[in-house]
Length: 307
Image (cartoon, rainbow, N blue to C red; front, side, top):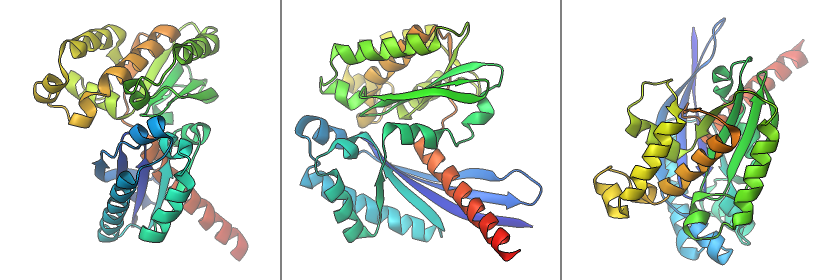
């Protein structure tokens, strides 16, 4: 007998807002399955507002309301039973971030949780990422966003340390990342990884997913440092419009993919990693998994209470 539910996650990032709807399939005595049913992405670049003007504009607020109303209808159509909306760097730093969240709740009914970088890393760590992490290996997890990048070191199957830096693709495009930020990231990566003899990287985010798709690698095979370095040089040889037409990239991907690739390459170089795995797991997947974990905990609590 199967128990089938649908959960949803809304990831409000600096470059785009995503809705992930996942089907959660339970069977007694078996591992629970999480199947991605629908993924919708709207390129509302909140970071362009916030990192330049410190506020979310009324124009983008209106677009957010439209997106949330659309997502509410999609979740209703899919019969979603649980959902959560989380906002990261852009809304966290916006002076009007909290007031915008309140207005959206009043307009659409969607309650937005504004989380910090450590929360984001912790949510992602609840995903099936752990299945990729071999207990005998060391990994540097690199999650590149529009406003920030989260780094997490895994060793012996456990989180050793994690840190969030204001090093994001939208910030770089708007020339808002000082050289000292790059230096801080370099110092942190070198310091936290130097005691390990061999490290692999894990890449997360829409940009590395796009790179992986273009590479035509078989699922599970990593991207090498040399491949990524060559791809980076190739990307820079194209104009913005050529990347859209020749590489068939979305317009809102064709500009941020260059700074994103630089971040991934830098992380690999400073950690001494030769390979980067791309499991296509991100914040939205972590939100779904955490919702499921909460549901299981609630059921166990009820069972204990009834005994």
